[in-house]
Image: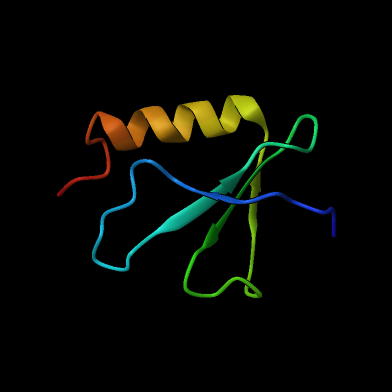
Length: 63
């Protein structure tokens, strides 16, 4: 696996439900759960991440 440099997302809340994002690998945005740094990593293309992030911020997934 690439050597991702994860940083805590500025959108993470202070209640322990945090995600970390890495953008240091070209053409890849990697996301992981900060509580499980050795767990699974989701990898997106920058375009797919942008679409996903936009859907989150506009409430597309809210019920």
